[in-house]
Length: 562
Ligand SMILES: [Zn+2]
Ligand SMILES: [Zn+2]
Image (cartoon, rainbow, N blue to C red):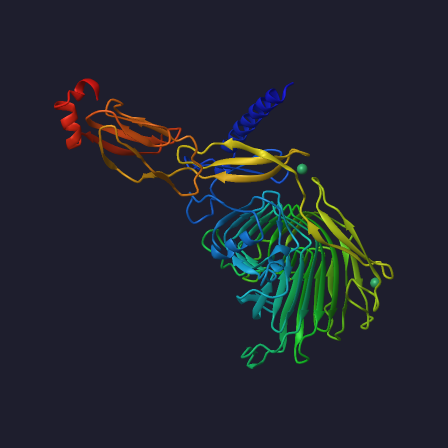
């Protein structure tokens, strides 16, 4: 088969795939009523088939199209439009943020929109501070605490996070107030997290709480504080005060895989007893969790009250709505190593849920989880067990098929972890236009990898919304020329193949570069239009004779020869 034939065959396959995708989309009830709103075409990380993105049903305007995120810098767009609809269009290396001049690690942000990961990965998320907001958390006695929160998102409220992988995240925060941290979010309510994966990540929370100013319980200064870590999220609010876009408080975590190291250090003021929480998915609070698998390596040194769970440290729907709560179809492996140096013991540690303040419905669970409690309060409660570790580094290069990373291993205690991920590297070929812009809808072009065939790069081709010519009326003398200038709106639209036409070539002709030449006395209209003819601009042209041309035409018999 010749190269030309191969290209032709590929085109046919692509068109067939697009049609199939459209049919599948029409069959999807969630999007079935999206009507005439344009559907966007994007490619999943594996490049196997196009993803057709219908408008976000939860977005403020149903016609909102997703904003593509292609770089770590683009992630700041989420902070600028926290209710927006975003779509990853590439793997993201967050280490670029700190690497640029004057750069810094990611600051956790509050978010209420949609982030569709499309199978792409956010690598090397590094966080060393809490978000700007204060969230409300509660303990098992329904005391309310003003709380700091950290994660990719400080707070998720009415958000949807789907098909996203976070790999190599390192969240290391120290809070002098009540505080929660999780890889995806420090705090969440009324949020759906579906098909997300957390790998090779670590959350380290040092709770160094000071007495909360003005906080009292039963008229006395408060003697407790609230702090916790979760593999996915720190705290799930269960107060029934969900945002209006979804009904009630309905945190849902479905089909997720979490493989994290969680480290909790109790360094709270000696006047306070910490309520401590640690869970592979959720530190404390409420979320329905279904179809998830967890591998947890937990470490916690506690002087207060310990609540540890392979999935959730303490499950609590604290508005009294005890009819909700489900943990189903999940597997847990790993261990939580901890001590509770406290005579008034709680020491909760369970494969699924540490303390069940609200008893969720449990179904189809399996576990090889190990309760690693010790009464040795001098034990080192961190993954690194040596005072003088001997670390060797091994760099594993990336390829088309897997990211690169560095493995660090202590030869004394065996502690090992991966970081410094490099996204998959492709060799992009030439641009290939998947869909031309037209009828006001954007198009798309891609570069396939010449090694593996994955989509290595993609770019939206913006449709021309309108054309603007420099002259809407033009008077020319016979035989004169004028080159009309035209600009598209938006200015970065994709607009090759503009067509120029004249309604009367006896009056004026037009070249395809916009040059108008007067051919005879009279009036005509010159039009430039996009190839599909849906967007155009016109210029009314009037051709006359100059005084000299009148003399040539009449006195010098120019009507014969001129
Ligand atoms: Zn060691
Ligand atoms: Zn490749």
